[in-house]
Image: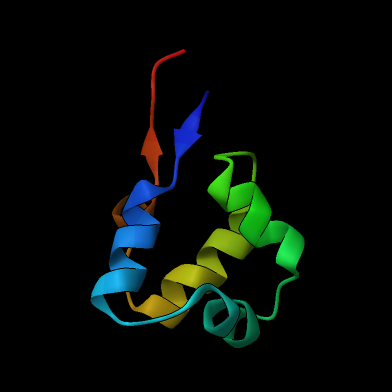
Length: 67
């Protein structure tokens, strides 16, 4: 099922968190940021780390889209 991470990037803007800062705080590689920007698969474990750092729920950062 295709996903979209636009909501994540909106939250990052609202909270004034840069991509490198999120990467450092969550402890993942730059490759993960690329995958997020391309709306590609990211593990649930990584998404959980992001939610914990941003103090939000999974449905606040991810949106399922139609094929």
